[in-house]
Length: 319
Image 1 (cartoon, helix red, strand yellow):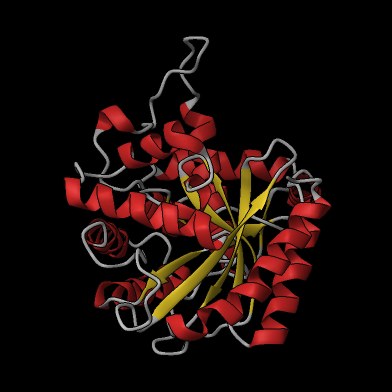
Image 2 (cartoon, rainbow, N blue to C red):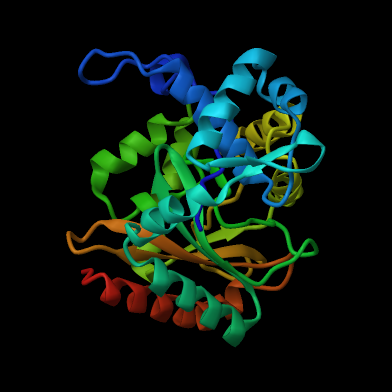
């Protein structure tokens, strides 16, 4: 069952991002009570198998204790939460049909799962399938990897869809989509960094896949993502992640030159999955620890990666 981890917002200017009080197209304000219930369920989903007292939930989510209790009782009525030992609350079985229905509505999820599993079995690297939705890049399927192989990602974990992350979703999508991606940056991007992103996109289209390098900031980000997998509501850790992501806008993270001497170590390869309309609907990635992939042997691995992505695209009648 796929639950999306609701990442805390990155440091994006208010004019460029949604806020909790955003007005819908009809002019109606979203319901604060529904938003709080969604936050509570997301928190429980982020730590499956754990249960929390009302006081723990209220403190973590910055809710009034009585409000938190009322939300839990309402959710208990439909079996979305359940109270267990020491009066602690966890997810209830009533959510299972909803999760199954949500997964069945995600195009190609079965193909993504089988594809990344086969890719990991064949190559030994951590393999991911990701989708871009709601301003985030979300892990939809995962195989392999461990705490020794950062970045440690799990199904449902998400990072903001901001430069330089998510190039694979916009490199084939035209100038308008590319410009919208650049505009999501937390701070204005220097002209030389914009040019680097454009060169990286051009190289990705030429090769058929994206390559990213392994600077020190990326290794630090891997450790941060591993910590967020364990402590998804840590404001300090989220803040550190956002600072690192912003710093990586200026790093030599995106590969712009396939010359092995200029780019000795690759951290990730990503290939696009296309939908029926020719748009990029997902990405298949191989993630490596430092010095496992060089640009010299990336092409061999990329052949298997692109074959996997083409297989998923075919299941979606993609072009």
